[in-house]
Image (cartoon, rainbow, N blue to C red; front, side, top):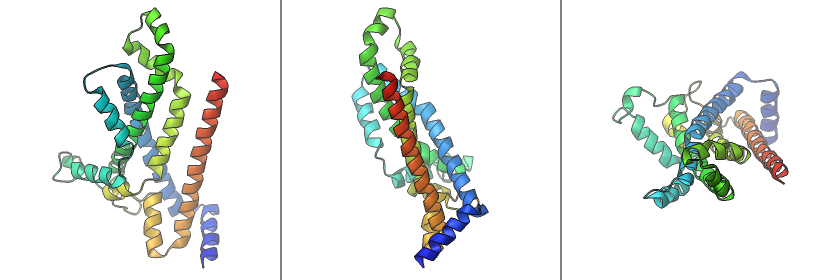
Length: 232
């Protein structure tokens, strides 16, 4: 039975089954958009925390590090309460839409990008501090320089964030509703189809998701190797 389901899953993939690839496409769109927003917000935030000294900075660092392990269902609950009809953002009408799923993934990924970029920028700041002082550069001018110089390391961080977003199930199911053709992504579809006994579709999506995770890890490894060779 399982072998037959596996062969049917491969057939769905090779024949470009429309429902399967529609789910894959929506998953990629949501995760890519979420990671892009998280990067635009998270990298400057991490660099700012690394560069500026202010009261409560230690608490901010601890909070960012703690939020890296934020349980997805907690993130989903927070976003659900914000976007529900009784919530402060309920009038936007985003609940059970791809937009709500993007927001939930941003909440999960942003602390990862901010915390890891803060660590990397601090390392580079220690290395280049004397040069910056001799040039009389302000912290605001240091930020883009350090972020650009750390671009390969940050790309690895970005890939890690994308991996977290694309493999997430709890938060997106809570705020997306797992609606067929609207908010059904790979992870939520695997849970649903397995429960329904539709193993071929679940296996097909699982193969795609596993391949995606492997490609992300391979990309992160190659970026790291390239960065080491450039600086070696």
